[in-house]
Image (cartoon, rainbow, N blue to C red; front, side, top):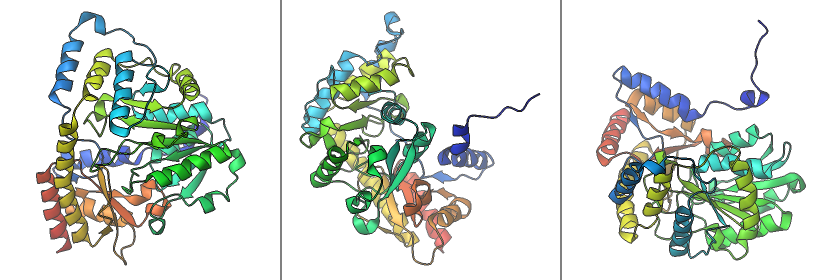
Amino acid sequence: MKDITPANRVSDIKEYYFSKKLRELARLNSEGADIISLGIGGPDRAPDEKVITTLQKEAAKENNHSYQSYNGLPELRQAFANWYKTKYGVDLDPATEILPLIGSKEGILHISLTFLNPGDGVLVPDPGYPTYTSVSKLVGAEIFKYDLKEENGWLPDFEEIEKLPLEKIKLMWVNYPHMPTGKQADPETFKKIIDFGKKHGIVIAHDNPYSFILNKEPLSILQIPGAIDIAVEMNSLSKSHNMAGWRVAMAASNPTFISWILKVKSNIDSGQFKPVMLAAAEALKLQDDWYDELYGVYEERRKIAEEIMETLGCDYDPKQRGLFLWGKIPEGVESGEWLADELFYKARVFVTPGFIFGKNGDKYIRISLCAKPEKLKEALKRVKEYKG
């Protein structure tokens, strides 16, 4: 039989770090290791009761199980528009400027396929969400990493970016509050990013899933006047509404960009389950008390995570926002990967090494807040025992 080989794109990417590590964690735990996972940013709490009730009620209806429109239910698009108006002060036309997505991760693929031809350049932050890089490879784009560094406040250095061959770059990935560092951007930074995109004809793709986690002042890049002409913003219910497994997200942009993304999306998926969309619309109606409670939950967990970092001798910025705590390892420690492996195998605590987000993350580790306080306290106890 003649040898079968995969497409070149399969060789160009690696299996997702968490896919491999969680498989090892599951194997070790099945053997009795009892490793505490503080790696993944998957909320461990349930959505609001009204959201679950809506899903149950709508799923029981006989006529709710067929294919739906590729651009989602009008009720869901309107709910997203109301949410953006209420929470960000941004006016969006639900008919033409909002596109529901089956998750932001899928949206990264849709947007990349929409704007990038093979060989086109794409700006990807380092450190940054690994999917920006892997999807860019899958679509055959040329990746240009732009450095985010602690000494520059984890913000883009446009003097350095301007030295790149910008004439071939078509898309720039941006993400604030930033994952993994927790840096919150300000309107001035967003304006610089938008001005840069307009100057060079580079589409700005802003990934915004963390703006309601430990953050009293959520921001959208679309708050900047004229941003919608050059930017696409994705948002998600995964973190803000404890609905990660539901796969409900959105893209917002000008009608032309949205129509182009819809062309791609309609050839890849067949829309979302109607009861899920109706339940998501209910989630988007939740009042301030939901977000206040969410803040309190993560505030309690964050304090324990900070104590874990301090026990390890790691430095961290107390102004971080989002679902994680990012810490710089002590001088003399080889790397974040070395420290993470030490904790994994010796303290039975799984934290994420910063190198998976790029070379600028090598001297850092990340702790997820998606574990109940008792688990975090047990992890702290184990780390203290490990440190002796």
